[in-house]
Image (cartoon, rainbow over all chains, first blue to last red):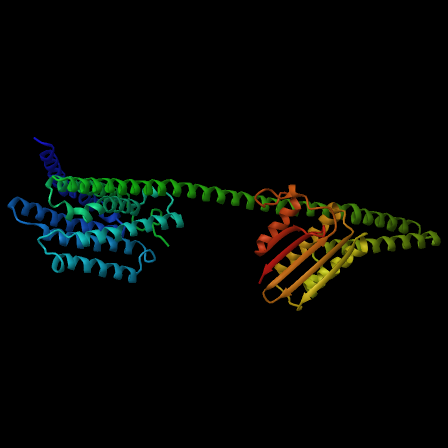
Length: 228
Length: 265
């Protein structure tokens, strides 16, 4: 077995693993549903939608059918849900007008990748890259406001801190994967190597989300994480 | 796999590692910085609370000293005089046939009663000057400065600029007491010959400035964080805090000590 085959097998296993691992945070989320803050519940709903898409994607892979159209849908929906999580966390952190602008930009590139300069059967690098840049910026801004306002005493017990950390690691770690996939399509081993890394980043993000669900506390004021 | 593809894949790999390193650095920095800032804020709050407690203790101690002084004044001056008056009255009762002695005793008793009345008035004025209540802060300060000028070797000048506003009675009393304390300090410690008191009043508030040509203000009485340490100064600070006033202690270029108190309406 050559190095190329090994990378391919590991990458496929990681992809499967990260797809099934989504059940972990969903389970924790539902077990602690009544203790989840409102914006954290949005995250749980997103994970449920994402799980359904992942399962259907795996089913299509087994059948040998192109499942890239699902990636178009899931990446578009993912960015919308995550932006709503930040919007609901604090009105002043992400205003309605800013949210509207970001959604328009994301939608434009998602539409373009699907119907203008690409197709649903091809990969969607532009919308993923733009979406990654948006969420990297949003997550760094969140950290900045956290340090500026100092209204969270124990940051490691704040649910939103863990959500934000997961978002930053995932999108920062995958930015170049998303942007550069077009250039790797000629080499399967490189493609699988980068997407293996993507799966690892996805697993890390899901672990962060699980931690967020564990630490989330609803409306008693002590662990609330409102940025002003 | 050609060289170009290897270069691109390596580039992407290194770029990804770089982004991850950056992301982790940001996360660790946020964790460390936030904890440090929270810790500093907490320590600062504790220091503020301790300082407020010290100010409160100083206020209580000053009140107790004042009560002790009043008690001593009453006992030593008025008490002693009243006892002597009583003796004289007893003697008067016994010596009804000796007219000359009788007149003398009555005269002495009357003189001592006058002294008692004067002492009671003085103690009462110290407790709450009637001028302050009836005519306001400006008149009360004028009277106080006049009294200090007349009763000590100091040359005390008072100047007022602005309209004759009346402020809330608590504000006026607090400012009056601050001025009393400052004049007292100058008398006791500064060795000054001139004191200049300037009061500016307007709708926005008032500004009281006290200048003296005495020895330089003792820097030991204010610690490195700008907090006062002497009892009298703590008392002043306590009253100023109650008013929301700002106090500045300065030494001017003309070798004068300057204390400026600003109160906003």
